[in-house]
Length: 344
Image 1 (cartoon, rainbow, N blue to C red):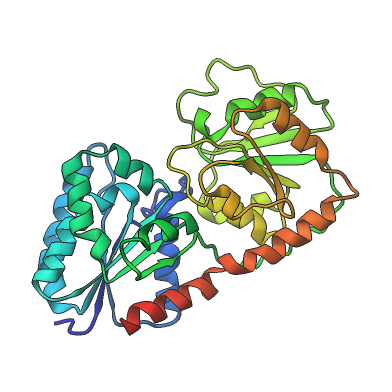
Image 2 (cartoon, rainbow, N blue to C red):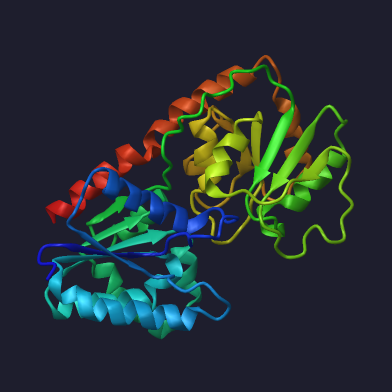
């Protein structure tokens, strides 16, 4: 039927749902696009989020497991792409089923909160994880911290960072103009409140635009100052075009599930420096040459970081950010990943 094909499982953006951005679906689609462009015909794909309606999780699980039961025996390897939570139920089930048929099992884990989940999940699920997923033939994780952790149990673990395609957009090499932007979910844990409060203390030569889906009713009871504007939601193909209009990306996040925020990678691709936080694995990808890191929930530090940029230092930050993007270029990273998968 499929013989030597590799079964790839993951979530992709839904067609017709244009106003979505970020997360595992963008990364999964990026990987599939790479396979398609390079004509890797030996892959068979199962969409794990096929249904898109309220309460669809149950139906997606049934669909995923039933399709896997039928297709897996005819493939040589299985690659499951999932967020960290998927490591505790779905991944063990598919791991044991793949081993029943003597197949190689590859697990790619999105996000950076696995260690926190191991500490908080029920003991049975953690036991199941260590009896199955941790023994995968290959494990790909998003952060270097997770590579270090998992290498204590499995030497076949590799860094698969958040990646983006190299932008074809002509980068703006303009003078610094105090134009800041936030692109992510509009919710408290992403530092939106801190941004608004910081800009209340800045004059109107500084301004920031906020983009993203509204969460937590975070803007409901807040009057935005004149130099802060909410601009709505961007589709994935609008993000780099819009980013290119600004000088600095703001992401003062303290979100528990944060790995390598994709929006930071996209900013680097355009030579846009970043103000973010000393939080989770963000310091692995942002240093003092690429932007400024502050402590979470610290409005004075955020204000000082915004004020630090000027026409004298901006170009140096911009050039360093653009150069740093090379290690997150999807064509470069995906090629290495495919080589590892095909050679096990």
